[in-house]
Length: 291
Image (cartoon, one colour):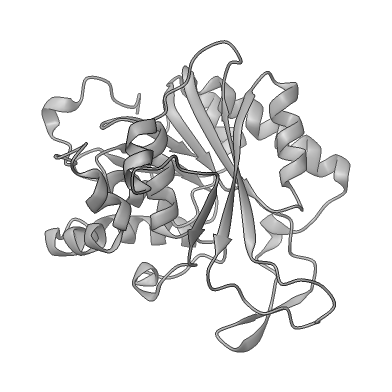
């Protein structure tokens, strides 16, 4: 029997502490959407610049690069497990850089997923390239794929068009890296901005949908999901990051903090004409996690 590491009182946010490859096979539940931010395998002893200081690029043992064969095997294993937890009309979003994204794309294709888009996240405030030997790295990629080539997927096209001033939204999105207010409970070394995850979830789910993140980190996915009325299960193997996830969720139990966070994300304010009530109430719980 799985025991959650943390679950919010309203049951909209659950964290499991452990390895997703071990925990995912232990329960039977289907999710509307999955967001995964797997290791990029960037921890190779290099250096970068952060806040004007030279820092190591090493994130931890979980991000240390292996051989191409090991990286491919790793991606095939976790994507296969996630596929079993995705509804037939569900979609998966996977972020990466050139270090891992090609392996991810090949794995998705081999397993029968249909790749819908490769979103380019352009960082408006990237760190400088201190070697001056090549262009500054300023983008990450997010693959969006549906489970089946033949089964239609969910896409809130009109909402995305509304968020883009009435024009079709392109696959190039401009967002800054995380702001100081997003680090109030501590920082994960690969933390994504809430605005980015909010748009992803708004694009591919409706209110009360279930969202899974097998590499939860500090649970930006879960905070974004709860801010817009979706439900979340995150799996994180590092206890210190699971603690940050818990503290971030407790933080938005304060209605002022919840409201402040929502006001800082432009897509939320613009989307309210389509989703006027983003709060989830107990009557909405027709289906719940099996633990």
